[in-house]
Length: 105
Length: 314
Image 1 (spheres, each protein chain N blue to C red):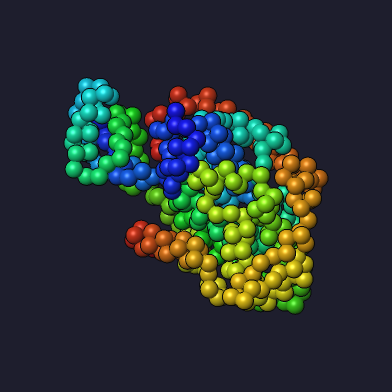
Image 2: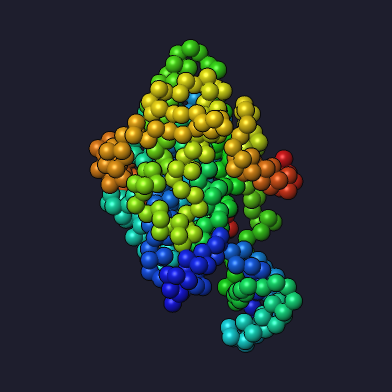
């Protein structure tokens, strides 16, 4: 049985996928995950999830974010005057980065 | 179970997660705070929803529908973060909201009547919300902080869009400018009250701060908001009303004379007893009842839904 492993480096951070292990049950999966994925890299917590419990939807099946021009829902589409609050600037920067990484239009 | 002193000692940013066995006082305080936040997202979305239809252009209509969709999504994220404390289920929170027991932001109790009022919510109130939410990325309940990461990422668009509407109105006809100034005067005291009562009148602040749930006091947040948004309002040609009186400190920052604000109205609203606001609560209740059959159908159908073509919302 395959278990997908998610590692959290520090308290408060996200659990992110880091690999998978073979194990007959949840207890063994936790032990194997701890040894394979928690031994070197900084680890605060690990999740193990049976692979067959995971649902997946991919970009070959759907167009994530739609197929029409949706520039209106990005902060970068609006020109305003004066200095923005720093949390607004931060959000706009995050959006600009995400928009760039999307790589399409 | 972790005792309260240990909680207070450890209470740093994103410190506690569902893996921790936390005392009831912490879980109840966090539930109250996050449920209030979630309810506010939903009630804000319902307040703005009519303006999808009333938008003056197709661009505004598209942006508004995207924004309302975002806000409902924020409500869903936050109900999950609240639910993960194990005190109340999402169904209980939504039912309380429908029954008039769920609490939410003062600004969303006032009817929104015309387009010139829209930037009062979508620029000033959203700007105020962003200020507060940015600090909550460091809250001690990890699922709440994670929800704030996504909310803050999306919210920049809302504020910029709202500001763009304000700019358009304030560079429009003289009549548009006058009506916008009128709306600003009506909303300004409510916007200032967004941050709640002053620190000495705040019921829940001390405990929430001591366990790291809340990161900044009402007064600090309100003043930080004024420092940023008074210059913005002036830049677009809005005149700041004489009341509440606002004092400019020597360092160029601002402080508000809080006795000039109507705290009786504020606390009536806080109890969900403000007459004009009942329409908002009941309106959402009716919407919930109207779509009950959809939820029932989906749940009844869940077993047979497998094998359908996958769909992603865009």
